[in-house]
Length: 129
Image 1: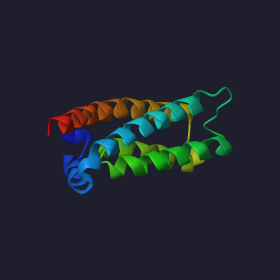
Image 2: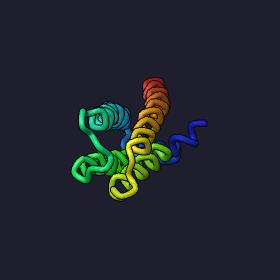
Image 3: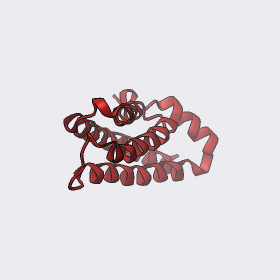
Image 4: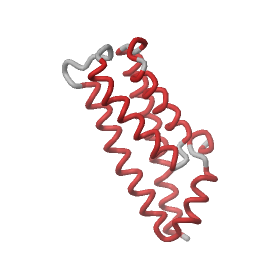
């Protein structure tokens, strides 16, 4: 199941390269991602937010782009794809609608929860090594 969410070979490579700093990398990713997920949710719940507004979609797209990059670097494949879809939707303002934006942000929130749990298990495994 974890392979659907996280490419474990990426984590293996990071573990080898980062050595003793690997747990810190996982921890930083988790904490940073929690902030990103909160920011995405806050943005779309801001009173007056409109998925039809280019000015409001631009920061959403930038957040999704940044989150996509960090997720990709950590092997969070499904999370990376969801962020890519949100970034694309925000970029293509003519196709953006509130329901689609809300669904993608919820999917990102849900997927990050799964990834965070998997990374928590990975962190625990690091303490046993």
